[in-house]
Amino acid sequence: MLNQMVQYMKSRLDASFAALSDATRRGVLEQLGLSDASISELADRFHMTLTGMKKHVDLLERAGFVTTAKLGRVRTCRLGRHRFEEEAAWIEARRQLWDARFAALDEVVEDLKRKEDADG
Image (tube, rainbow, N blue to C red; front, top):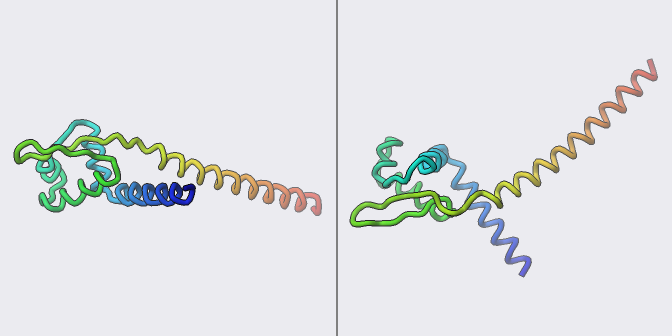
């Protein structure tokens, strides 16, 4: 069970970071943070084809960042419920690790400076 949860978390993070790795997709999220938009409106805003924008939206939707609803011929996009908690926790854990490593390095440097000063 734990192994399945770890695998789910990894695939969820992979999908999230893949979705966020592209400047256009991050821009789409910013735009949808301001207001819902159709795929056509997003394509116009980002100077893309409908097919290209649909691919970006599909990836964002699979990651849970965007939801879409079709009314007639118009597919409207809005921010999804995914709020980056898992991604933020993963990043924070890595930040703490690096902070600890830099703190240890600072101690080594300070020890070397003290020894150098003592040796004169």
